[in-house]
Length: 311
Length: 263
Image 1 (cartoon, chains in turn red, orange):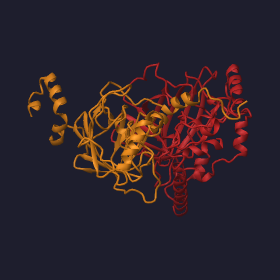
Image 2 (cartoon, rainbow over the protein chains, first blue to last red):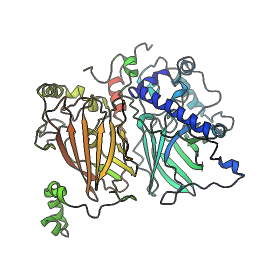
Image 3 (tube, rainbow over the protein chains, first blue to last red):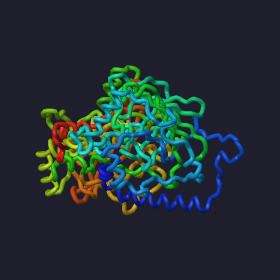
Image 4 (tube, one colour):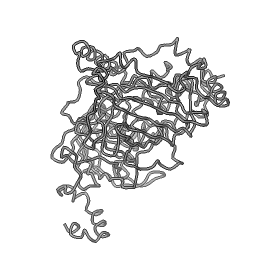
């Protein structure tokens, strides 16, 4: 992430820092004084069963911190953007949402990032790889609006452009599963009532998601993407034939196992599988307002004028 | 009552509902409305206004790209203090360039988010009621767990909302509202002292009566009130889509512009 996207948070920034510090304090206390409850894997294989919603599905409602679901390809091209990120001012770690997982070490050892292909060398179509390398070469300084990093333009994050710093909240209703991101205030209402996807001419930044329960796993199928969100700093876009399948499985009171399969046949010759976790956020977490366009000076700085006249 | 009696004559009923909706709702007990597991009215669903309040809360004549409309304010006009009225008139003159929601796609604030001409979804559970608005994927959460407004917080574009149930009415107290939002496209405005109390009363399964009192001692001479029905969107499989006006406006304003420092 570039330093450019530090600005969009705007006036919530200070508040966020306060809250996060509080979370860390709370999490530290919890971890210091509490040895229980014990991680499921420590119980000698006793199968943990999740709490249930009234309609019988695993109850995943609450505040969560995402960990590890990212597209970190091997042999990623060097870009001015990544150098900027490495030598610039990355977010201080205090911005990470605190995690209440008693077994932070267990969380750290969970699979993260690209798990297929195992060597993390992505199955690029040569022409697609060449096109994105060409695109990357125009990003700093940006040659035009479309080369400005997506997060700095307040583009909705897609499924991978969100981040691990801001918390997520899950609310479940009969017939739908709601995943709310603090980041860029995205709300995904995933209907599980058997409805089909919206028509093919509707294209969406966050895609159109429909879900179904396979046992205790929520399986989310998403299509209808546009080609305007990014996968990572070195994969600044995907195509509009992107099709994703996400699997949410609660494995203990503190962890939802998250699996994401990506198919984008215009970009890649084979599916890519990514793993990550949603870890229970520190007690007392709540979603704050993340204003992006409202507070951002990024585009005004790049172009020399803003969206609205000074009043 | 005449209208209730003629329920089976669907056309007549619809006509009567249309004519008498507001006065009837104010008195009618909420019968047969859906209820959540905690017994409260179940507001879950997708809702939308069918009026012109987003363009102008007051009575107004039609003009280019502005549909005409009867005002939604009790008493007809907004009770501005003199200086604030002058500011409103200045805003009106500059509305095509300075309306934060229309020209920059900033979050519309409360109550304007409710009556933007876009649907919004209510996601309700006993402790938290979230409103997810299609316009700019704006969202706000209303805490109904008995907590109070936090002390010492900054202002938010969508404010800080704490709710409680008074009988079958959801009452939402909204503070910490950013002074930069407008109340409509006609330049009606407020200060950082704005305090909004909203009331959501489900009068029938597919209708909510929405009322909001608006208090701002820096701008108005007294508290004033708006009210309007919210209609449930009944189309099969209807869902909130995306109106990403930040992106559309960026394309319009910067799409052909050359960045400073570009080669």
